[in-house]
Image 1: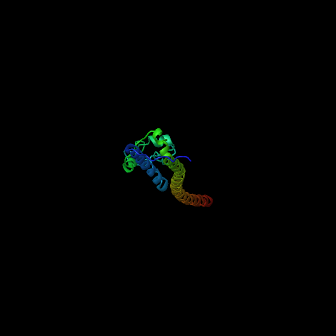
Image 2: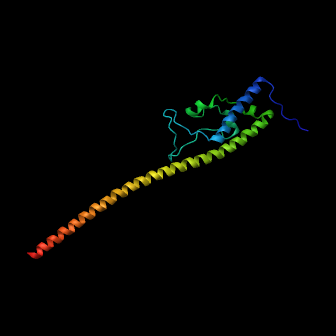
Image 3: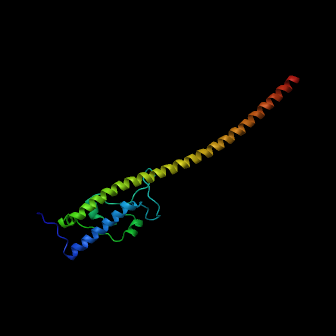
Length: 174
């Protein structure tokens, strides 16, 4: 019969566990509510990539990144809402008594990765639709201007044809 991992018994081990569970809770909330969008620290505006698509803020995608994550990797607007996060060593995280926690972290990061992909696709699909709607609006305005031009040119053509007919009639009479 194998021994189950013993819980941390020292104050420092309990503190480290508490800090890791706090980081895990943040990631779990992001799985539920969505990963925050990265914003410009000065303007607060969403950051866009080279394709003008919104970018998600930083989140750890592996155990090493989770261990190192202390919130400094996140944009200011996210850091203000995170509360204190602390890095830890991978060695500490890899201790036998953290086996259950490590499993939860891996499961949560996997779910967060899926959530982030869906979130980006949905947000950028909205941006694409919004962009297409703006283009449609501009094209409708162009069509309206061109229709007006066609009406104006048609009237000028009718006027020119009438003048030509009048001149021909005048010329025939003479």
